[in-house]
Length: 423
Image (cartoon, rainbow, N blue to C red; front, side):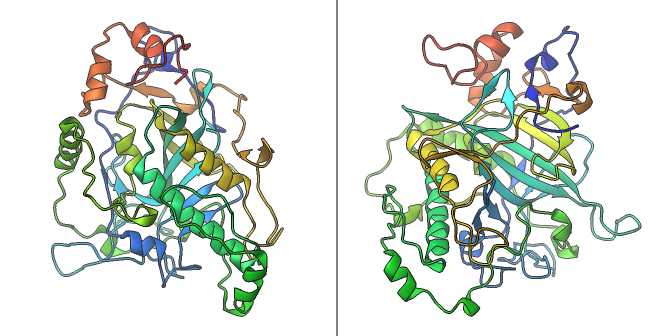
């Protein structure tokens, strides 16, 4: 069951020979953890580095902050009782898993690995969870963690305002990039990105400012391909927490959207988008759809062996071309950090560079061996549950499945004259 494979909407087309009924009965409710932005970006007690943003050979990664023993290390959550442990961000799969899935990391790569009806998107964001039974209810031999990946495809658009959350993340990756270049004695990237701090250190300044290498924590001892089995989960992570109303959170987002107010120019905008709140599952809010493909398979990063439960959203998240181009550049111009086992302080990527070092393809090709029936692919949509999003409900008013699936496949209109599935 190698992945990725092509996503086919006929799995949800009633009466098609490939039709497979979606067994899910509700969307994936998601909850942010207790880790603050400061915990993630300035994790003094982290396992390897102050900053949990990493530019890997195959992806941009944001890790949950862990100590050297694999314990979540961040601000304790609000709890009922006397056990105020830190809280992982968590997500609720609909069917077959009575407990929450805990978020281990987010990653972004270009272009998308998953293909929907022949369309390969500009990028994708993966939120990777692990599943563990409650404390004290573990099988013999210790915990058996499962992997669950929620994937949001990403498309760059010329007439879309920049997404503030994506800008905030980009600024932090630019800091990571400059930290690595500084340690390696390489000059800063000279081009600016609007709203981000501009680093302007020459290679000579880097050599003069570089600290003794013995004081630099090795930046890459943790597996580049995160393994959730090294994450330690204890009783505190399963303790009862104060109630959180997910419905109210979504209602608040909808009210803000429907107020249709212009941004207040008096609101102060901070450097590096520090005025923008961080939510670990923000891409699931911003994509504005509840519907997805349900696929079982393997991880897409070598050794591609771990059994993985995928949920791939039906719509792409639209971002500005400026944002897409910066994500592509960060991956294409990666420098291997000091302490790397190979290519230390040299240009280093697992992908194929295109367009004069400005873009890189780090995606795994489609795996066409075997039948996609082996992946238990389902397309979960309108007839399976009613969405909270207005955009979904409008899309669901298209009664003819042929039109809904193929002529107007997204919650937003394609450009005039575009072929189906071309954003």
